[in-house]
Structure formats: C-alpha cells, structure tokens
Length: 465
Image 1 (cartoon, rainbow, N blue to C red):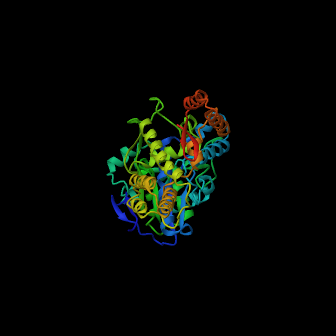
Image 2 (image 1 turned 135 degrees about the horizontal axis):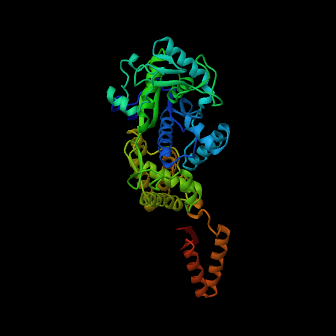
Image 3 (image 1 turned 180 degrees about the vertical axis):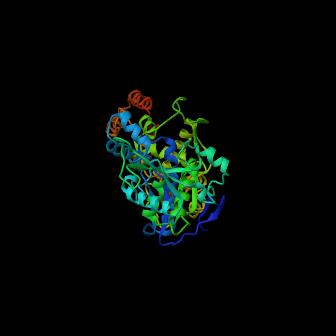
C-alpha cells in the first residue's frame, strides 16, 4: 500500500509519488517567534512530526529532508519587542528556545533543517527583483507589491474566486496599489525600525515571500510536500504559490499540499477574552505529571482526531488520553520480564498512517496490541507484542517514557520515590510484626497523596494515581 495524502490543491486524496524516492522533501510553516506557542500552534507540529516519521520509515532516514522554518522578522515581532522593552534579537532567541522546549515535551523532534527568515534576506531581495523583471511585481512609494492580475490562475490553491480572494485577504486599502488584491513583497522601514538595504530603499520583507525563498533555498524550486494549518491556505500559501510559480523556472513548486484542521477549546474558539486560551507551557506547568509524561498525554489527544477535522480540546479528552496511555504503559509494565522482538513495525499501524495519516485508528491498533499482550502467556508471543508496542509507539511518538517515570513521575510531589520505598518497607515490617493498623495507616496515607500500592506475588509495587 502506498502513502495516500489528501492534497488541498486537488481537493482529493491521492497516492503520494515523490519526485525522487531518494530525496523526499517536506516544508512546513513554522512559528512566528514573538510569543510562546499555544496549543493550537502545537497541532501542526505534532501532525507533521508523525508524517515525517512515516516518510522516514518508508524511504529511509537519509532520503527524507524535513524543513520547518522560523519566522523571526515580522511586524508582530517588532511590536512585541517594543512592548516588552527588549531587543528583537533577545525576543526571538527567547521565544525560539521556548518553542523548541515546548515541542520537545510533546515528543516533536527537530526538523532536519530550520532556516530563519533573517538568514535569507538576500534571497528575498533577489526573488523580488526577478518578479519585477518578469512583470509580476512593481514598486510604489517604497513598497514592492505582487501584481495579482499578472497571474491568470491566481487562487488555484484555495479555489476562491476574485471577490472571495479580496474579502478573505482583508486587503489593506492603499492608494499605491494597482489592484486591491495586490500584496506586499517588500515594505519600507523608516527611522530606527529594523530593516535592510535594498534596491527599493531600507525595508523589510513581507511575510509570504519569506517561505517562498526559504523553501527554495533548502529544497529547490520544486519539492514534494508543503504543510501547515488550514488557516494558512489563504492568503499565505496562495501567495507563496503565486510568488514561487511566477519567479522560478520550474513552476511546479509543491506537488502535495497538506493542511491540518482548526482547534477549539470546550467547543469554543480559543480566546483570551473567554479565558480558554492555553499555551503549551500553561498546560505543562499545571499538569500533575512530569513534563514529558504530561506532554505525551497532550500529544495523544492531538493525534486522536483526524488531522483534517476540527479538534475540540476538552478536560474529558485529556483524561481519556491519559487513561489510554495508562493502558499502554500497564502492558509494558507486565512485559518487563521479556525481551522485545524489534524486527517489524506492525503493518496495521503503518497501513493506518499511510491512509492519509489516520492517527486515531493507528492509536486504537496500538491499544489493541496492548490488550492482547495483557492476556498473552507464550513468551515468544509476548516478546513479539512488546516489540510491536515499542516500534508502533516510536512511529506515533508515544510510549516514549520509562514505565517508572510514567507511573511514579508526578510533578511537584512532596514524596519522592526513595521516601515512598521507605514507607513501603516500613509497611512490610509492620505486617510481619502483625501491626496491621500501622500497615493500613501507611497505605491510606499514601493513597491520600495519590500513591497507589499494589501487592503481588513478587512484592509491593506503587504508582501515582
């Protein structure tokens, strides 16, 4: 079975056929680093992390290049730096590190390449010059704008007509525009505003030109997959298509456009005014588990809805995700006495992921394997099932914590593992001395602190509730 992806440009699911199986390229729009990432920002990071894992599984690590950019020049960054009374360099360095830390807690690996917009200003100036020379852009009052009517099939990605395009872009009314739909490639930077020298004066690039240039620099004029959130289809990705197709000799640009759906919180659009706006850091800090364990719960929830559909973030959903992971880690705990046969990733999980990144069904299959492992008695079968859990978990980016960390690693607990072990030993000695009242007291005290004791043939084990 070949990988099937829903291609926004074709409005249908298609078999993925790379331009070159030995050089598969994927570009995903990364963060604009002016503030910490909210949970909606995390969805594309997690979704395309899984797609990158799948591509590497199919084509080999050395034959896949995953590029995710950092937008470190943009008006929101300038405004935030001024509001925080800090330099743009300090702001972007701080928020880039925060983004990396938060995504790492969600199990999101670093891309193969991570270009920054400020590293490609010369390339942007060059591409803008080419667009001007080809008659697709013009200078006006210190601005350079893309001439939308010069591209007859503008709007082909989003499928919008001209009226929808103008309305959807919330176009800036400006007297220097030839057409209301024209968009900025370069804008002036007066006074001490950050900017770079160019043939059109000191200025800074428009947002859209940045990704056109960075994707070309890292993957070439044409590549396989371009990804991002659904909100980027128009105007950002539409304008990328216009710039790249008109400037480059190869007008193919990206062959497959993959977009994830929106995220709501308890059925409502995320908004600070509604009090339902959560950054990833907010969620990690308030969790009762260690950061990476909490991050894995949030990752599971993000993957438990079809990536193209709206995702409703709820407290119940978080609880259900944790319960599902408890099932998986319980199976791993019961399999600790056997080695793992790691030769094969379960075909059922791979096939679900090949079917347009169907992570919900892939997760269900992983849980089914765990339930099967719980009742298996043959040691060889248990070793195979353990290997399937490990390999399937690696492909999905779950089951990445140790069993001990998962069950014993609560954040902010007053009792550490050594203290709990001491109380368990005291309870054992109390039972030997027939001081059952003290033994029960220890169990109850631990239970009040969220520590569950489990007595078995091999002794007493514990985990956090």
